[in-house]
Length: 197
Image (cartoon, rainbow, N blue to C red; front, side, top):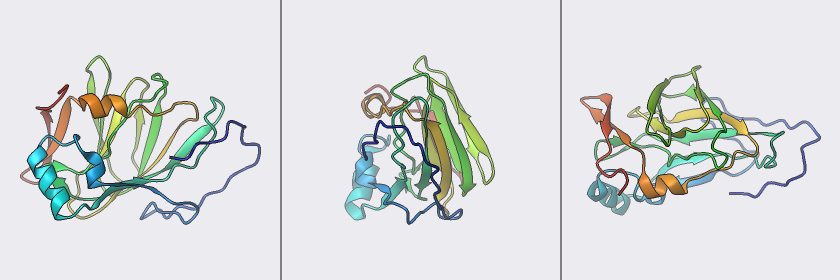
């Protein structure tokens, strides 16, 4: 991830995104192949087999390197591709914010899926993504995008305070308390058998 300057932005910035693909030619994306998701899926045997068979791109996102300042707004797009590991849908790694009280907003541009959210105290919330629907993630909540479509990428636009930071380590260590799996073509929320391990 690029290290943003600490000088405030003093000139307007315009960015062109494709509203269908979420892609932009303005800068390279940060890409996460399936192998970068080690430890995130409940079925480790299915994960190992999927990576060995074809280490596909599971998601990518654009971070526009906004200064890490309280007065700035960081933003970008996230593209989560369709696929499953066992019966668990492809998803982003998910994160808390380093400044835990920081909120974030996501707007679904295309595709379908879920936003899984969890507070340190164990409150779990799930909201649906569909085109034109926004999800406001309150401060103190880890959050993860999950693509529940069999064929379409889930494309979201996001924005959060410039000084929020990202804490991926807590999720890498403990995971989320819940997982989302495909049950007869519909998403179902289950307890994560590997949570905390």
